[in-house]
Length: 462
Ligand code: ARG
Image (cartoon, rainbow, N blue to C red; front, side, top):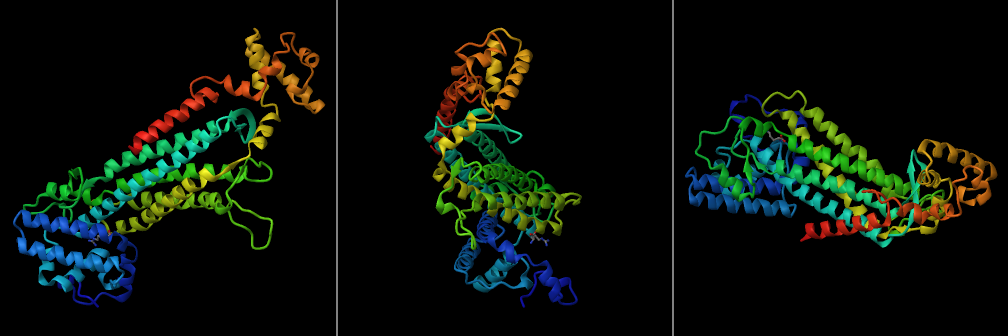
């Protein structure tokens, strides 16, 4: 059993169950690269301000390098008595570098150390998330661009409503994930603040140079208030909020893919490589990826709620409760990145069943609004037109026909304003392309939106 750094004031050994209960190394070990990078920057700074010598910093940096290699190669022994990753690294450093290791923790506390590690970790993961969101947006734009003329039913209340371009539907998701990306970029700005040097909570008596540490670790700013710096987890709550919103978007997309790939809809076929079968029913091809993504949404939202609940009512400054921030955060990061990445890979391979979509858009009176608009265009007030078309719909339903399947004479029975040109007015292409209001589904708008998105993506990649 390793000696504890705080052994001095304790009369008895820590109970084994307490060690197991308080230990966090099983999960916080993933922070080791940041912990070591932070320690290297910290000791370089201590040398710069004259708290340790040049020779000491060289020994510490070399020792930390050795410890890092051991961790990289999985040759590191973990032990509950050393609690967390910080104490493990420091204890091992003592063995490989000798007594000089006892100087590393000068002007530092685990409270600011963990704040630094989590920020460095989350900064990297947030950048990765931003890249994955970009890849997903690109996949959606390219699927839209490859099918510029596919018409499908647009839905409200999951009831067929009006025809839209499938590309328009896909570009709606592009908009959602673009906002998600902006949220991540915004959050990154607040993650990227350097807390080290605030020590336990009050700052330190040593003449430290925090700006130098920030420069070494590539942080654009240092935290303003030492008490805030060790007790702030807003950046993690923000990340989890943004992650939860992204998961909700992914879940909505997944739900549509599950529905669209049913025999009942038949709008899309998922690639075989991204589906699985049944152990009993030989015919089955199941949309497991979207289903699992939909299912995983609860984990990420749960992580957000866990962290919000963890932080609520915590008095200033550091509290050990905050150790519980890591598992939900890590799980949410892993879940979100896996879901984004698999969707970005799957979406380009989705097979679009254009005829099935078109057929669905042709049945169910999706042209009723357009027939009303036709009458409005010929002088009838909209409310009157609405009622008139309602009667035509009831009549057609009774005959088992669509509006455009009624004869001209039958149609004229509802209004003398109706002429032969109504039929052309009610074709899918005309209905879609007349919707030229800003943001509407006309081909012209959608092609422009795709072009604009491609330019935005190319600019982001440059
Ligand atoms: N393992 C701790 C955490 O994750 C590190 C900070 C511990 N500080 C302390 N004084 N016990 O929050």
